[in-house]
Amino acid sequence: MPSTLRSDAVASTLNHLLATEEKQDLVAAFAEAGVDMAGDYPVELSAAELAERTKDIIMSVSREGGDLLYLLARAVRARTVVEFGTSFGISTLYLASAVRDNGGGRVITTELQQDKARSAQENFAAAGLADLIDLRLGDARETLRDLPGPVDLLLLDGWLDLRLPILDVVEPRLRSGALVIVDDIDLDIGRGFYQDFLDRINDPAGGYLSMRLPVHQGVQVCLKLG
Ligand SMILES: C[S@@+](CC[C@H](N)C(=O)[O-])C[C@H]1O[C@@H](n2cnc3c(N)ncnc32)[C@H](O)[C@@H]1O
Image (cartoon, rainbow, N blue to C red; front, side):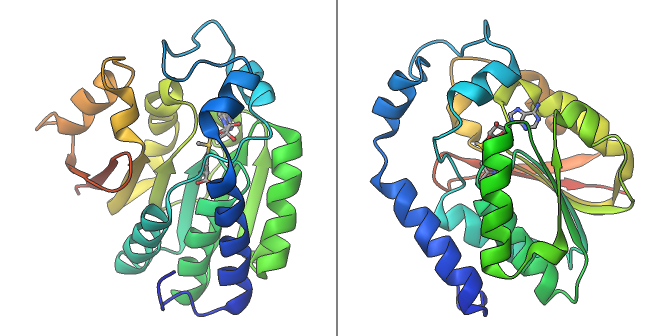
């Protein structure tokens, strides 16, 4: 936990959630949910069906990834943050903590599965950060259409095949110098879901500078140019 996470309530909520996650047997949990994550991506399931089947599984950014989110949000002095994929709210807590330490603002986050959204709200309250977080229940392709601009940081951490469509939704709101952060970039190896995303981000005419960082399963950090 970085020393910059100054609030005990945030640190203890995160520690509790991350310790619970670390006790999970992820392979067994996905198998029980009928999802073979080592095989082909379950494209036959809708986003909502996949969310329903995996509703009890904590699959958050890593501790290191969370520290990186906090650091980057502080670095760009983020006041307005948008997140695709709340789950139990672990990444949201790192981001909201940074927003609070930047002087205040808002994290707009969205989750498709209602039980997860309810648990996330409880975690936000336990951490004392609920007043900084606007959790929108529903499909990000709809819930993120109405955003206040300018957005300083976007975290893409929902289902792999929806990350480019969600970038399309939020991109018009990104300020020059905003960061787009993509978790688990390495999970796509051999599957190709990110290829369109990476082609877009790495296109010299595309308006981004981008780099993969070797944090956990790969974090892509993209800077929106002016
Ligand atoms: C990898 S988890 C997010 C983890 C979270 N960012 C964290 O670090 O704690 C992905 C989440 O995205 C949600 N999700 C997937 N597709 C979605 C969509 N179209 N709209 C909203 N949420 C979605 C899933 O239900 C799941 O809880």
